[in-house]
Amino acid sequence: MERKDYERLRWRCIRRGLLEVDIALTRFLDQQFEQLNDEQQQAFVELADMEDHDLWHLISGQAECDDPRLEPIVAMLRKS
Image (cartoon, rainbow, N blue to C red):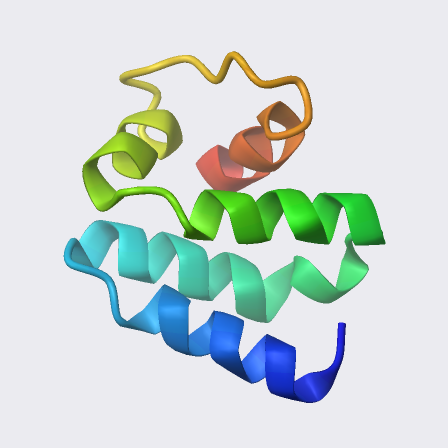
């Protein structure tokens, strides 16, 4: 991922409506994102595009992820 794309993604992670989602995404981005392969990075970008409440339900375990591409990233977010 190019630096400018990373910075845009970081901005989207920081400017969330729910503080909990903001913290979870930003922490993950800072600590684990660079270790992901391209497919996993794209999955994270897709998660970052979700509505805050839907994403929070996934991260907090209130909802199960039914997309096999996104599930590993959701599991990582739950642990971070």
